[in-house]
Length: 231
Image (cartoon, rainbow, N blue to C red; front, side, top):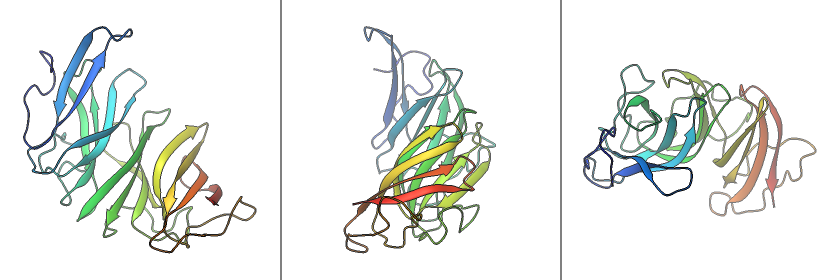
């Protein structure tokens, strides 16, 4: 049930997502809004976080060319058939503060999102073929195959702070102090690991059987502290 004064009170077509806010004791619906476009494919909000002022940031994947975006955002128009999105709404879900697409020229996958201390947004995704915007093709995961990425957007979603290839689908991103801890999986034996790590050996079937990975890198994406397979 959407609420009066919500950002979007009517369905947009296909399968929309919705965002709802409940009272602290779960007894009352404070606000609820639709989020979506008119595309035939489904629009999924897969991750939600609160900014420092209590406003709401959501991310996921859309195959709609009219997902709601804002002027001045990093990418107000869709780049491919399906893209990642990041959207920032007011605490009462009445207004869209900022919203952007992110992706390459074909189809992108969404894996994860987190918010840093300054309210900048880090997302993990994948692009097939590997056409998503990158600030470098090397970065701390030097030698990683292109296709999957880790990306940081400015708090107002207008700028690409950094975007790097990882060589793995990043399903979890945990910020701590000035570092990012990530975990996920890869089918690439070439995924970069560090000397002395728990496991430097890929034991799966390349391109087929995935291997779990974990790593720690600096929040500016300049330094890889450690990286390992988990076998």
